Length: 292
Image (tube, rainbow, N blue to C red):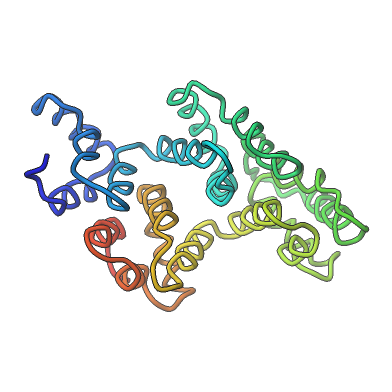
């Protein structure tokens, strides 16, 4: 592998689908008599290595391994945990759980429960249990009103917060239903849902609820904002940038690009160019696809 330049690796692997990368790995092993992932580990380092190795997994495998890494050893990387668990839909979470069990011979739920505590743990577990309703063609105005009032009465209206009610509604209702609930909520509360969350809860729980609401409202804008945040200062928070680009490149990256341009008045492509460098930058730009 040493004779292959980073550029060749970037050129080939960032321009293929996950399916194609799997076939390349299969052929490589047949031909070179060794495992492509091990060869890549030997040839690459740093952020570029993390990015390319991430691409060698399916989206669900990548999410599962990021979750596993966020709960390894001492201390938890709550930021990663919140981003993945609170932004994935039912289908994605069900697949992540299945793959997690395959890869690590453990249950995601058990690991989350062992690694978090209190209401933060309750919320994450409620989401990981994937009990969210499927969207319905029938709009139930009564239920929308009931949920909006329940959210208000469990939070802003009383002293202290009845977090359990919030968790139940936000982890079990369908996304279109919740969008209407948050709209209706404004007729009960002097604050919108996000302001209410900021007033009522703090720390990881606050971050989790905010992530949920942002994703219910516009998931692609949530990721665009995370990318913008990660590339605000001089260097980029490479871990965050890598995770979002790798995990969304075959899901909704084009839409994320559109939201990015719309809200931050410059393209994701330009932003990556300004805040990253070298081969890592080349790989990101190739995955990003184009300048909007």
